[in-house]
Length: 384
Image (cartoon, rainbow, N blue to C red; front, side):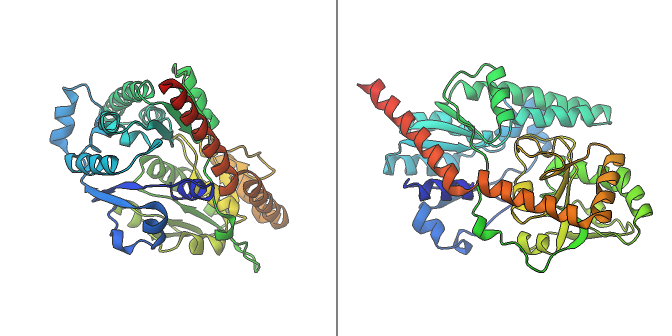
């Protein structure tokens, strides 16, 4: 979100950024760099989105989606009304489906076009989670949540003025679901200056970096640790696997598996990644684009990912990424990297070149700004 905001600002747009500051991931606004306030007119409102058994039961007897309903707050609505009444906006960009509960209040207090920036096709994530769940009760509930979320997501598509997905796959899902309005696929953008290539080289060890409070990441790491890692460690006992990310479940942190280093939350993602070369992304579910893959590619890391993990990124297996969809495939790709380090490093450098050519902030900002200008032109034409 910050990268896209920077992209738009580089293209000459004036931005106002309003964030839902959840208690789970609370950030003191005063701790943010000054440019948040000078460049983005930043403001926020605290909201409690924690899960509640009582609310889950209550939601079951309603028509709403509990996944999304948790993100509505009267205090957020009041703060949003104040911002809308004090400013005139051409575009109101909703970051993810979870800001959609405020569409009605935006319509009431602004004439701006409402655009949904879809980070994922949200219901696809939950459908995949339900398919892979082994517990009958959890499987049923995940399927129930997926159904509710799909209904809500399709309804939101009919209520916004445009959609900006971050992958072509999600664009296709929305079109297949019946969306016929304006749509532009805009991938994640990054500033390559923030991802310098390490001159001294990196250790050929494995690492994974991702938010472990996201269920697909938990599922992926459990699968890798118990279904993939044993065979890898047996063949390469000196190889290290480094795992990092916020929100690690306590039972994973407590594991004492041979060759595995659990770091939990790290202060600087780039510092963590720079000293290691091979990134694993063993996702079995999920949707959208994996931000950490783009960042890893930008740093020249060699990515070994499942097909689902690499979805939405136009990489090519064997050229700028390695694809592995089974324990045997992961072992094969890792063995190739360790046996042929020059090829391993070459794939990483190809990935860095690929990102520089396709995901720079300047290119992305210009495309999205032009799309928004066209929406505004159509708005003026409608009023005339």
